[in-house]
Image (cartoon, rainbow over the protein chains, first blue to last red):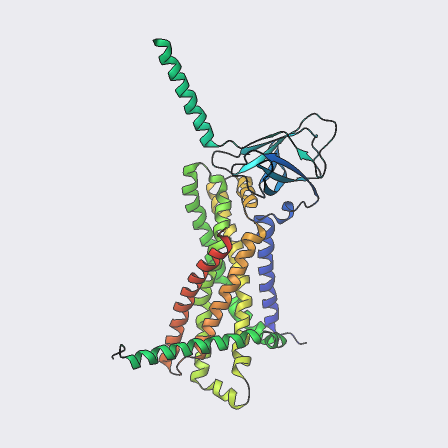
Length: 160
Length: 260
C-alpha cells in the first residue's frame, strides 16, 4: 500500500491524541495507583456513617491503605455495614479500631484505622467490631444545648 | 407575507417535517456507510488531516489560555476559603468534564465545520455532485461519508489535546506563576479525578459533539441552495445550529452522566 504524505501527519495527530489521553489518565486521574485490586475485604458495622461514600479512603496515620468498597444497610441490627478493601501490603491486628473522620473542615469523610495489639492479623472476610460512628453536628449541638440548659437550671436552683 | 394563513402554516410545517425526515435519512445512511468509508481509508485519512491537523494550532492555543484563565480565576476564589491546594482538581474537573469537549466542539464548528459546509455547498453549486451522480458515483458515499467520519474521528482527539494542554496551562499559572504547592496540585487532582467517570465521560461527550457538529456541517452543505448566497447562508447556519446543538446536547449529556 502506497503512503501519501498525509499518512505521516495524521499518524502524528493520532499519536498526539493518544499521548494526551495517557497524560490525562496517568497524571490527572492516577489510573495506576487506584487499582490495587490485590487487597483483602473486611467488614465493619457502624451506628452512623454520616456522609461516608463508596470509594472513600481508608487511612492509617494519614496514609491511604484502602478504600471503602460498599456500604449497605443491615435491617437486623439497624446498622450500616461497610465493606473495606485494604491493600494486602498492609496488615492490621484483629482488634484494630475504625473511626469515621473528616479531612479538614469541609473535606470528605474517610475511615481512620488504628492498630490494636492482637497477635493475629485481619484477614479476608473478618469483621471489625471496635468502631466509632461519624460525628453528627446536630447531635453535638443538641448535647451542648442540653448541657447548657442543665447548667443554668442548676445555677438558678443554687441561688434560691 | 401572511404566514398565519392555515395553508401557509401547513406548508411551512410540512416542509420542516420533510427537512427533518431527509436529515434523519441522511444521518442513517452516513452511519451505515461507516464500513465502506473505512475500507477506503485514504479518503477518511485526508479528511482527518484536513479537519484535525489543521485545527490543532487553534485548539492548543485555546486550551492553553483556557487553562491559564481557569487557574487564575480558580485561585482567586479558592484562596478565600483557604483551599488553594485543590486548584489542580478544580481546573482539571472543569476542563475534562465540560470546557474541554464544549469549547473544542465550538471551535471545531467554526474552524472545520464551516469549511466542510462551504466545500460541499460549492460542489453543489458547481454541479459537481450532479456530475458524480451522472457517472453513477454516489456523492453521499464518495464525498459526505469520509468527511463525516473524518470529523467524528478528529473531534475526540482534539478534545483530548485541549484537555491535556489546558491542564498544563493550569499548572503553569497555578504552580509556576502563583506558587501553589506542586505536590498538592497534582495530588488533589489525582485524588479527585476518575479515569472512567470524568475523563471517559468527557471523551463520550466529545464523540457525541463530533457526530453532531460534523453531521450538521455536512447536511447544511448538502442541502445548500446552489447560489453564492445560498452557500454563505448555509455556512452561517452551520455555525449557529452546531453551536446551539452542542450547548443543548451538553446539558442533556451532563444531566445523564453526572446527575447522581
